[in-house]
Amino acid sequence: MIRKGALNTVFQVLLAMLLLSACGDSVNHGGKTPYIGVGDEYLYKEDLEQAYMANHTQKDSAAFMQEYIEHWLEDALLYSRAKHNVSSSKEIARLIESYKKSLLLNIYQERLVDQQLDKEITAEEIASFYEANSAMFKMEEPMIKGLLLKVSKKAPKLDAVRRWCKSTEPAELEKLEKYTLTNAQLYEYFYDSWMPISALAAKIALSEEDLKQKVTKKDMIEFSDSASLYIMNISDYLPVGELKPLDLAESEIKELLVNSRKADFLQQVKKDIYNEAISGGKVKYFMNKPE
Image (tube, rainbow, N blue to C red; front, top):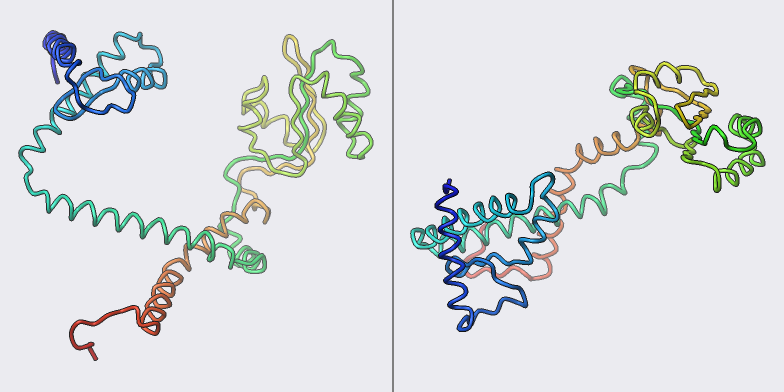
């Protein structure tokens, strides 16, 4: 690690060198302003400012930038020394090409899996797997379906609002929807999708444990804080340990089925490509073809 005092000296020398050489700098910096240079490596003022805006958190700008520049210098100086001490450019090129090949293969294979194998998994297969392996699919955290409304304690028509929240009639829900446009501080409609209690607790003035105690029954509940009223209507509740419904387990089952077939699927893809290349005369043998 470069000491702070030494680092300041390094900064001063480097900045002085940059100022002296700025007029004769023939490097194309792409419109950016070089801040520090080591060999043919440059840290640009724009990149430094962007890094600060993205990562400064609680640090002041001077402290952050000095630490960032120190780390950049350490890496740049080590890279400069490595280039002088690792002279096998052919070996580096071979490694780069090998990595590029592996990367392309992985991306292409994952794309094939997403585009083809994923679509081959049918709803019937998912249901069959669910029935045969139901013990695998237990609730790990409570989930609910329902409706949540947060309004001011002084909001108008609260008695009507309570009635609308409790009803599942389309006409009543339409009245509630219109009401929320001008009066709701928070409105969540999730009768048609499961929501983890932890996610709901994060939106309201209750701890997760307190909310768990309130929603164990499929009913309407009401509570308040100093300024707001919360109205919830719970249509479904799933406690920890209960069997997940199929609609909750579906994506998990699909992933299990895809992974179980992935190796065979990719092996078949390779065979198909190989056979197509052989039959199409795309493979050239420069010696006798092996029997």
